[in-house]
Length: 273
Image (tube, rainbow, N blue to C red; front, side):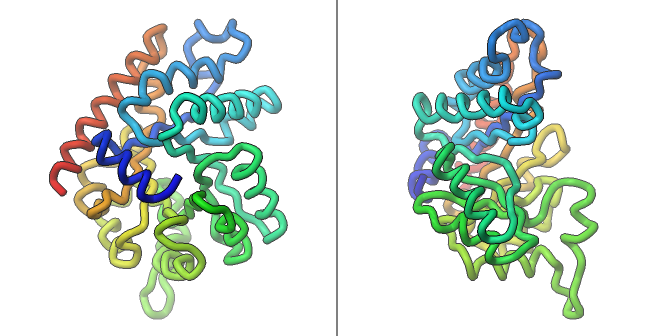
């Protein structure tokens, strides 16, 4: 998906919501467990009820890989279902890949050719040759981990050099030498608050994928205060707060209601631009 298409979808739908499909077999409603593929059936129902209110979906590979072949079949079926029925939604594979060049080339082939997703999260620790294979694909997005929402992010990402420049700031500057606003996004956790202002000084026009709103305690309004730009420039992800809002038979309906609540808040923020 091209940048202009993503921006168009955001303003058309009044939403920059990304729904995280972190589907845990131990958390989905019991009524699904007797089905042949409960993970896919759960995802399908969630997608059908949330699609009007979001512009993106982000299946987290760990939840599918944990089930072996059956989980990966469910992942592949989920991707196919989205592409066939909701082609205007950006599909982000949250796999956090990143390795030496030839290995990254295989990861890129896996996700951008075999599964044909729109975007992939990557870990930049190993440097340029671990990232550039992903950037070779037209109309695909590389989503680089920059400043994450977890507690341990402070262990390394906020470390300073002798000039007081923090590691995440160095990362933002360096990776811009490899990609651009049309093929690279950055993961920035919603819990980072006012640090979004520092990030925007370095990457004013890039899209930011923002996890951590909802269950992790991040504030949508604070994210928008410091992080939104004229093109919106944000994809705010909510996973548990939407997909596990109900554990009863009405799980998909309630998920749709939660997605709509967030969409309405997002529209209010977009209307300020």
